[in-house]
Length: 504
Image (cartoon, rainbow, N blue to C red):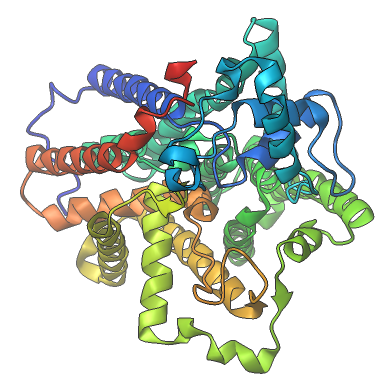
């Protein structure tokens, strides 16, 4: 097997590789900063709800029920939030958006702000979300205040928390690729390069998706090490357990990924039993279980006591107008048709790459770009699966384990949200709707960023065959150019918004 092309040893020496990784982190930081600053505040993917929880956690207030948006957060939302995400300009007098409230005399805009405040009245449906992101973001919010950030600038400071999170995510992607393909320079650099320029709008918003990707990415690396170790050490068990707990305590939608992790740990335990090494590895296994189980268990008890169920999702589902569908009606869902299945899978994959943000109540993407992302993603998964099923693929044991784990993660999130689309009646739900009964939100899949990109770059490596390292890196460069050009073209209108950071 040609695991690596050694024709460019000087270009990709250890020191040069680290320098390239550092450059990718810096470019990603600039990328996230520019787009975070360009998008106006309070987008359509519940940014106001996440911001409210950050403010509450910054004061040590952990919600124990679905509460209204607090007064402090409400003042920021109505003063600095933009209506451009949901409302087309034609709905305003003269076909133009009104000037930003913060540029107008308070006496003039007070009635407008009061009316806008009424539209945000109601319970925060995200109140039962796990606490890790809001604790971290709450500390970041307070730090911004201490540093002198005020008003809308301080809200953007909160968005800029995504910059260090994304840079760590890139480092984790490189770490995962290096652990699985230590001799393949293309995969080791291709994975962080793709992550650095991925355009999901969740990276530019106040929400917990970026930390979700980071935490499960760390768990992914630890689980690969744990599974491959002949006798896992206690320290590895502790770290693996803590990263799994962190993934759970960041976002509840990581449950399907954690289910795959449980299966992987169970297989490892069975292997230890078969090889009679369980006794020596028992401290590590127990440490993993305790470090993962205790924090997750405590939060589940909190949710059961305060919200009525162990995940806190019951009230969230109820407030969204969603009800359980009778079992007999499950099979009438359009997802069981070829067209419906394609719609769900292609939209999920495309939204995973690009995000779920609307602009003037329209998706911020092009149909051609949408299709390209979907087709590329499906082709990458199919090719990876074919190579794993081939005995002639020349993969090592750890490579097979990691790639199967990655496939299982990607499959689990798609199957889970496909199942959720089927079992719930959305007749009275604003999103999804009876005309579009699919939960195809790309941000729900972001926990699987590192497993998916590892599969994607591995497939690029194998598809290029014997073309050599330069051609492969040209392919990655072409992918990056495509991501950037399509993102800039789709998001260009936000740069001229008078509500964004550049106009404050």
